[in-house]
Amino acid sequence: MPFPSPDTALPVRLPDGTALPFNVFLSAVIKHPRVEIGDYTYYSDFDPPRDALGWVSRIAPYIMPHSSERLIIGKFGQFAQGTRFVTASANHRMDGISTYPFSIFDPARILGYPRSLPQGRDTVVGHDVWIGMNSIILPGAQIGNGVIVSAGSVVSGSIPDYAVIAGNRAEVVRMRFSQDQIARLNDIAWWDWPIDKILENEAAITGGDVEVLGRA
Image (tube, rainbow, N blue to C red; front, side, top):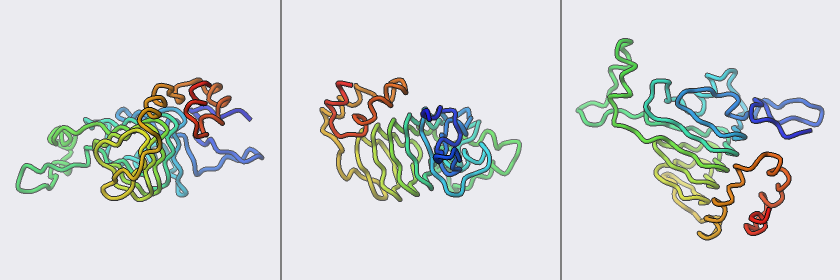
């Protein structure tokens, strides 16, 4: 059976062809003006939403069509159940006496509420990022390529490429490769190859030898 298209909503199938409902390619189920998702990034959820709006609300509940920030996710991401992206529209004003968002309860003013907030950075996730169960990605986080986020982490700020992070606030536990190897991997950028070439070189991509991958 050929590798599923990135437009496939339910890409995991049993040998008899039964599609499992627990894993989705996010680019196939989310169409949102402020969300960009790369090909083959999947999300696992054992209580999946029933429609596209439900998927946006599940992974990024605060981003709205009128939000100023964007959520940008790379290719080949692997996101476990409970991964949440808390984007900048979740913030409250902190320059006054009260942080209470009165205007969201007024239909005439609700669309202007995000513009009343301090300008928040886009939240960006690189390519080939694995995010463990029940992790929270805070507004403006910048997660590099090849990062592993341990389950239950709370992630903020900039995370370097190919780091393993854990905790609240998440900190680097170790680096997966040397700086020279990381530069080489980013130069190779296997995630941008045609899918046929990726599949032909699966062993090198999932192996641990950067030089072997570089010769692919």
